Amino acid sequence: MATASRQDGSFANEPETIRELPGDEKEDVLFDTLFGVRTIELNRPKKLHSLNGSMIRKIIPRLQEWAKSDMANVVIIKGSGPKAFCAGGDVAALAEDNLKGEEGQQKSTAYFGLEYKLDHLIATYQKPYVAFIDGITMGGGVGLSVHAPFRIATERTVFAMPETTIGFFPDVGASFFLPRMPGGVGTYLALTSEKLKGVNVFYAGVATHYIHSTSLPALERRLAELRFKDYDPLHERLQLINSTIEEFCTGLPHDEPIHIQGELRNAIDRCFGKTSVPEIIAALKAEQGETKQWAEKTLATLHQRSPTAVYVTLRQMQLGKEWTISETFQREHQIASKFMAHPDFTEGVHALLIRKDGKPAWKPASLEDVKPQDNIADPFFLVEGAQRLALLSQVDYKEYPHERFSIPSEAAIQAVVNKGDLTPKMVVKHFVQQRQGKQGVKEIVQEVVDRKTKTEDGKAVWILEEPVPVV
Image (tube, rainbow, N blue to C red; front, top):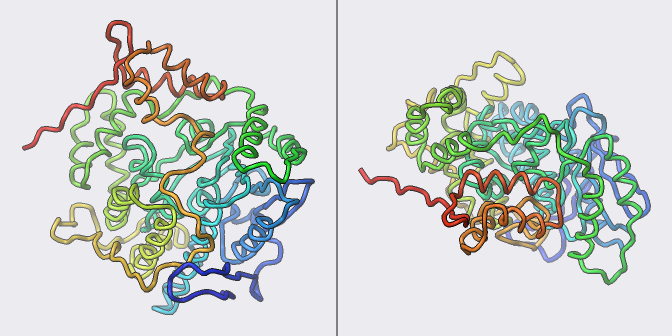
């Protein structure tokens, strides 16, 4: 990796220089300019635009260049073709490197360091950044999009964090965004690799907007026409872009209801709100009624995953909610380095992507083989300060700064309900007006009100969680 980096782990005063290397593919990323828009087009269609070092070494210098340019108003990232935005990192190459011993493992760890530097640069980018997550968006593709102020899903979007299926952990900043999802949803998606499709990527809050894929070219042209004054602050530019995107939101599909809602959502919170893997398994086994079949399927899924990855990921979800965005990528880099030295990652990739027999031999082999005294996750969270990843931006935060463009959070809805002076209908109306009629807000807030409130004297009252009995 051609860099001029600081090796002491501290933030460099001058941005690190990252540039292409001899042997990098020539056209795996395409760049274009249309008036004030700068586009990044991922271009490895046969690999579903799987991210590799060659692509990252092209994207980072462009983002750094555009950040300094008064002519660049909006950055759009997209994938070429209809199938995928980005299906993840090119993990098959990493698994092959890991077989070469410590030197190969260090090469893999260096790749993750490069990837996380790009993800953090995007997460802290000081110009409007819009991700068209049209098609498959998994793993590394999530890192290129989910931290952006604008994430546009379409009817073709398929979202997942599938890392536990290959003996790895949800990375690319998942430690930050998944624990900040409501209730147990983030932990559920992390441990099971459950997919969200189409409009449900928006309903879950992964996307900020839902637009039909046929409208994306027109939206891109419209964004290119926007004009900003040099002195317009970032929040005003973002507000104008948000309003422009909303013009292209022409309706939600009537035949695709909110997937994670009602009793399923309550069951996810009951089970994945537990603090240990055995407690989650016991809770799933205890599910009855309409969620019993879901619980049985979820149990079977968890038992197919790498036991080490499941334990590490649960700990990650518990700790990540307290990490800043910078700490997230630095801690994930250290976790990733430990997975490169663990047999499950290489075995999982070979079983699913190379041998394709779907029968990984995990070590330990099953969740039941893990004993509490093993403390199986502990080594992955040892902090090695001298090896802290040096990032490309000094910007940091503990909550996403552009949440006003997303769907209302459950905590925000609870705060309004707890004021105690609104009927259920008035709660929904409050958020529809606050978000200026944003598409989907009515449906999402209504689902939360139906599930989490009761009516007393005509007013909405938040249903408090029943305390868990101490045995």
